[in-house]
Image (tube, rainbow, N blue to C red):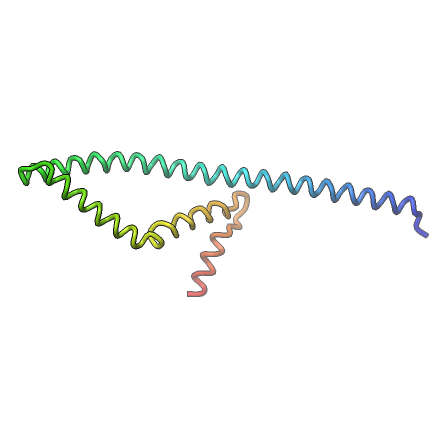
Length: 136
């Protein structure tokens, strides 16, 4: 029959392999989390930098537009009031539709970055898009 010493040795070996597998799996999970975090943060950093440059451009264009309108109306402060009124209306519209225009696209971008697989052609966001098209 089976040797009890041999069976105990097999169980010990199985335990050690399971322990090592668990340690390696935890390490792999940590490395994947770091990779995904770095990917998301690098994407957000580049987006923030582009937004800052566009904001600076917009600021100077708006100052020029305000001065131009003020020059046409012979009162510079009126040009600034008109441009700021436009932005107040724009802010109200954005606030009204913030879920559809801002929150949902940003959430989808972050989720797509987190679920994107770098090492294969198997991308979860692509599968989700295919399922959306099939349901429609």
